[in-house]
Image 1 (cartoon, protein in one colour):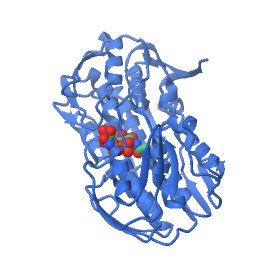
Image 2 (cartoon, helix red, strand yellow):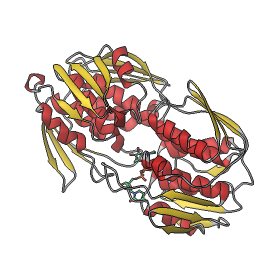
Image 3 (tube, protein in one colour):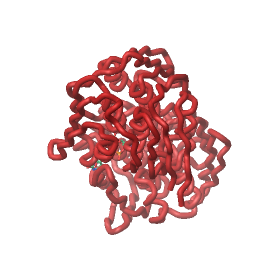
Image 4 (spheres, rainbow, N blue to C red):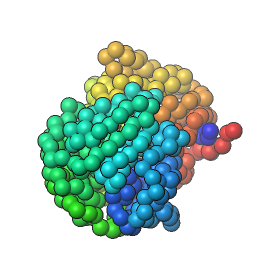
Amino acid sequence: MSSLIITGGVPLSGEVKVQGSKNAALPLLAASLLIKGTTILEHCPDISDVACMLDILKAVGCTVLREEETIIIDAQILKQTSVSRKEAEKMRSSISLLGALLGRASQARIPLPGGCSIGKRPVDIHLAALRSLGAEIEEKEELYARLKKCESKEIRFPYPSVGAVQNVILASVVSEAVVVMKNCAREPEVEELCTFLNQAGANIQGGGTDTIIVYGVKELREIRYTIRSDRIAAGTFLAMAAATKGSVTIQGINPFELSAVTEVFAKIGCHVKLYTDAICLEAYKGIRGIPFLKTMPYPGFPTDMQSQVISTLICAKGNSVIRETVFENRFGAAIELQKIKADIRINKRDQLVVIHGRDKRCLCPAVLQAPDLRGGAALVIAALIVEGTSTIKHMEYVERGYENISGVIHTLGGICCRENEI
Ligand code: UD1
């Protein structure tokens, strides 16, 4: 267990370079299993979810080498096709190994991922889609799956699930089949998986749109690939500056992927400038509330930024209303923020949070428990606003997705100190 002790009340200002994307890196690491040779991934984030995925790859037989931001995976030899409960439990996205192992070895045994603090997160859409390709899947505590021959099919997803689309791509990319997918998730991380695989010799059309067609190929070749920057980490750093009336320049990010987020920051009164691969945000004049904002699949406002935006708005002028539409239990941070005397009302039935912006002097420091990865980041933002010293416990959730967040805070002139606890 680790904690972050933050002395808030200081505007955060400066320039940061963004880590590689967590949600892009994880499916690419799973996809490396499909390449019977070496995959070199550059700009890979140094976060615990990546470490966990690398442990799983090693356990199934890959040789893995990490040199700073570069990861080299040799998947020439696969020793086994099962993932142990201990490893899978640490990370929900171990489910992407289901498609990858079926694609590589025609079989897989993976513990059924349980729910998590943000929602039940079933895998029914993944399983139905894989079954329609011809997979036989037995669901007990573990998933026992076989896919002797991937069949050509048209699949219409009932919901644009990011993970389910990625799983179908992974299961079908090396096959004799043609798979047409409709109502696909359009998240940049789906597009990135397609780009990565295409550069390795795949033939996938339409990544990043709602219709993706996989024309199966015989095999994939070795590849060196640079992972794009993490749009949610970038959005979180923008939120830190907006919340503390500071200014930040984020380097190495494609602003187009963050349009829905930068639009919101502009609406609440921040001065936002977009460059080819950078975003500048200034919030010296303070911010105002947003009458209504709802989370949506891409290109809508990302659920992964919902908690951070709630924290940003606790001292805004006026009221804000936020609706969560993607996950059914994602208000853990909002509940926790009541401990610092933020004026937040939560209506779970309608998935709504109402924030009455307060003067900063009405808030008080507190000991807060990170409820999940993004919720923990939101508490960090809130503690940066509050004058006095707050403690965020369970930073291990945050470290699943953020590389050296205390280092970023220091770079921006914030005051914090990380502590390990037993
Ligand atoms: C990915 C991201 C996560 C992000 C989410 C939505 C990774 C590693 N994680 O998660 O950070 O918050 O997209 O943008 O990329 N659902 C079902 N049945 C299924 C699959 C999903 O009901 O079989 C539901 C989920 O419970 C959730 C919604 O669909 O309510 C969206 O889930 P999905 O798009 O699959 O998210 P993930 O791929 O798990």
